[in-house]
Image (cartoon, rainbow, N blue to C red):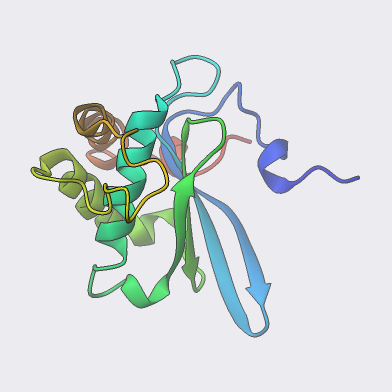
Amino acid sequence: MEKITSFTIDHLRLQTGLYVSRVDCAGQEKITTFDIRMTRPNTEPVMDTAAVHAIEHLGATYLRNEPQWKARVLYFGPMGCRTGFYLLLAGEYRSADILPLMDGMFRFIADYAGEIPGASAKDCGNYLDMNLSMAQYHARKYIREVLQQPTPDRLNYPD
């Protein structure tokens, strides 16, 4: 079997960043998959599940309500390795194209106060496993490391 695209990336050289993972076609429509890498693989500790779960709920809520992008959001969810998230958008984009969207989403998470959307037994299958303060820590770290001063090495996979 062939390796899938995400297993061909050198995770030993990968930093926190916002990368185009792949662009696929679904009929005539292009779909861009973004790798939102929040912790450095195999170097930093991974995010705990409660922080990941809170980021997932808040991020999905933000993205599916963002007026300019909501119709193009196909999926937002965590990587199994807990080092980041995947975002799938209808259309073909570069990382730089969605920097304002990511900045808005991570600032929404960093500044969020109140009950996490969907954090109830009726709305979620594991609603007790959420940690807003750790989600905010990771959001602030991502803003600082990636979004405030995006450099080419944080927007393009290493060669």
